[in-house]
Length: 493
Image 1 (cartoon, one colour):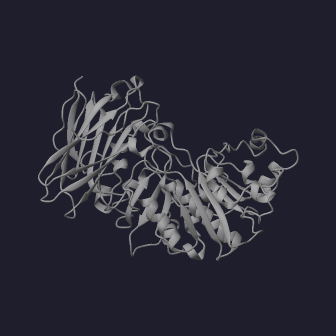
Image 2 (cartoon, helix red, strand yellow):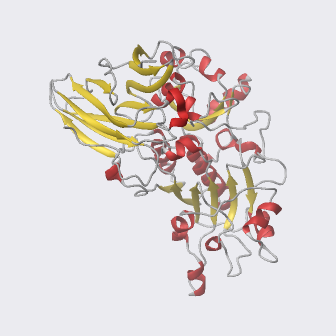
Image 3 (spheres, helix red, strand yellow):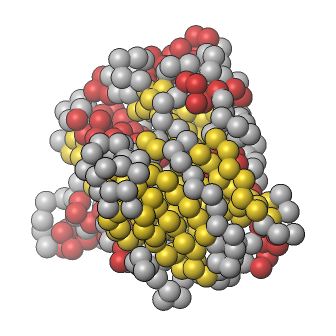
């Protein structure tokens, strides 16, 4: 079957996002539009159960706490649930507007009714299903965080690969006592952390019991901990070492700071390989957990020093993404300081910059690798000398048919046999940042993808500037990490 382009608007055919979301949310997440346009085919299929989302409440509207309590008051828990991190925050965080929720698909149908006008923006944790149970609403008796060891500062670490069993995180040379006062494993399917919505939580005395005696191996600790998985850390120990390590103790230095740990929820294999958007909901939950437990343990004056080792190969890079704005809000309370990662990938191989003169067109060449089992993603961000940019986009597949020019508000799909091969979302200012962004998402290039296989080779991204001033395009390409040295973005011809 010959492929062809279909051009529509975001208000046509992309249920359940439109028209409800467009009528009530000013800034739509283009990744959610792509996921719905493709029925989540590149993300493991249409999700069932609850999906975590990160939310920015409207300025001047409800705080996160007020919204969480409104959910309970109105009996909405069957389709939206918020954890105790937001329902019952410490005083320092009561006025915050950024939060997370666990929603069913019914949430989208409510955007134009019960939830109309409440949100500035929200992002979805793509291909991650939550196991939140809206009926559990309080910490079980005896499960409150340990209050011993109050101090001025506590070190927090959030990473996909971090473990309390690592020797660098021990209080003693024998490795039988951990520096972690509490540890949240977001991946644990046991879902014993009831008020957090997913994963399991271990307190210091429980971790010390696992580590004591014959100093259990990691495997034995997992077995005695009820099968919980705490993988060996790749960079977590090194990232958190500013809090002190074994060498400090041997050299007679002051004891290192106590710690709070979060093993972040792992996204599906496809999105890990393609980088994909940042895990806004899981990262925000993780940092909130560290700050809240630090306040409970050390009091209102306790400051959390948080290292987050989970980044993104894209976004606008100006601090306006939802997760960066949420972390800024937390730091503005004075309760924490947060450090984000840098340099984990070769940026020279996945980004490009293009200046487009007034009333002119230019193009980016995007070499897409063969045999990729993950989607390939491109974000094109714009900075204009004259305010809002006026940009059209045209996509030319390798050896294929060029699309029509897509204008602001358009969504284009390149289909073969009814299957979406390429999706272009051109909605302007969305949930991922303050600037205007065009998202281009390709299906995997692996032969195993059948009809949904995108062509490997050089895709052309043509950009036409309709304004009377120049505009600069910043391209961020994301795809499978590979030993292939093919650059992910090439300069214009």
